[in-house]
Every structure is written in C-alpha cells, then in structure tokens.
Amino acid sequence: MDLFLLRMHQRQIAHQCHTSLQAAEQIKNGLISGNQEILWAGVQNLLTATANIAKAAWGSAGKLTDERRVLRESLSIGDESPIANVDLRNHLEHYDERLDRWFRTSQHRNHADYMIGPPAMISGVEPTDVFRHFDPNSGDVIFWGEHYNLSQLVEAVTTLLPIAEAQASLPHWSSGDMAPGPI
Image (cartoon, rainbow, N blue to C red):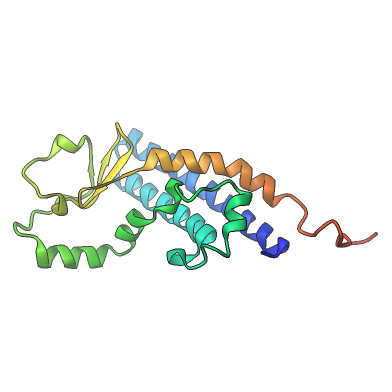
C-alpha cells in the first residue's frame, strides 16, 4: 500500500474512533437520563462508526482483506477484533428487510423492540421476535437472539485510537523521498 494512502486510511480510522467514543458517551447519557431514543441513537452511531473502521480495515464485505493487511498490521488490528463483526450494524441498517422477513416467518407475530434491561425481563417470546434489546449489565445488544457486546467494541476502539493517531501523524513520504514543502 502506498505510504500516503496508508496515512490517509489511518487518519480516517482515528476520526471514526473519535466518533465511536462520542457515540458511547451518547449511550451512557441515554442510560443515565432514561431516554431510550438517545441510547438507541448512540448504539446506531457507534455501530456505524465502527463499521466504517471495519470497511477501512477489510474493505466492504471483506473484499479488500489482502490489500488492507498492511493497514491492519500498522494499527495492530487482528482479524479477531470485535471491530470486524458488522452483523449488528447490518441488522439495524437493513431493519426494513429484517422486519419484512420477521412478518413473513414469525409464528406468533410478537414484536419486542427498543428494550433496555436484563434479558429475562421478557419471557414467552421467540428469539426472532426480539429486535433491539440492550442489557446495561453486560453491555450486550440482542437482536434475534444474537448477542453483540458493545463494551468489548468500545474497549477495542479505545485501544485503537492512540495507535491510529500516532500512525497517522507519521510522515507520509519515505526516507528516500524529499519532504514536501520549502527547503
């Protein structure tokens, strides 16, 4: 990967880390105030920003995994990073499709959504009837029975931010090249 392009990707990832952490604060504020609209907006913002990091690091749908390996290595992002998993973001981004599928396939058509509390707060509902459920004790968002831990995601972004900022601030030319600007 060209060094200049590498620095631009690193800078973009640093920006998305900042956006992710601001979204995490939004989630906390929603919890503290009891405002679920703020909380869920924060969840969506966090997932969008971290998906942007994943797209930079692996390409959309992993199409640039090999080409972006140097970028991931420069930022110490492993393939096992929670940042790599964009499934929950996809559920929320394509909510309309999930709703249509649910309507076609749900046996009882129970619809539980925008819930905040422990998973046991609701019973007698099929996992695929539960759309957005946030467990503040574990940091999990549950969608159709799948658990996604936001705390691990925020921790990964918190670790990544100083690395991305440090890498993005390095020169974008090789030592053999003359530095740009006046001599």
